Length: 242
Image (cartoon, rainbow, N blue to C red; front, top):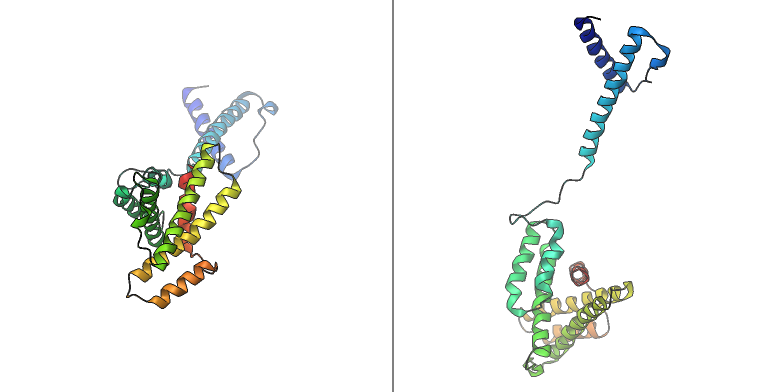
């Protein structure tokens, strides 16, 4: 066969192979042919294999999930829990501003809502302060203003801190079991809701009746955690688990 004839055979075989792949037709059997036709069919099958392999590579590439988005600092947004936990686990009041800025970045990257960011900022401030005053050097319980609400908030902060300490103790022993995780999440959500409600009262004009009603609700277990408190409690538990 001349070079021109061979070139024509190759081109036609390629076009025929493309048609078979696109139309998803059955492949011809070269064993039933002989001579030039057999060579043509063998070339066709070769091209079919090449086209199928190329198509598989494109499909695989298309199905490969895109890498997590990155913020301006190049930190993967999917790793926001890892980013936050480094500061969170110190519960150092001096690092409160650093933690707040990290939360702002999380809001910007749409990892958490603005309300959850505010709740976590409050949690860090309140629990961190309580830890320093009760577990730090020269702990001074009398630093709290012992009004009726002040005394109750001391218990609220203590309850929240104890849950964190229980989570850390469980992790040190191996792992945090589902029951401990659930109890910690529920308790933290309740205590965070109380801290947030008390902050809202404190930021407005003093109202003894509002304080009384809030304390009664909390004492009777009628203070229901909102979505921000629940989400914040869940994030805190995640930070403690990692």
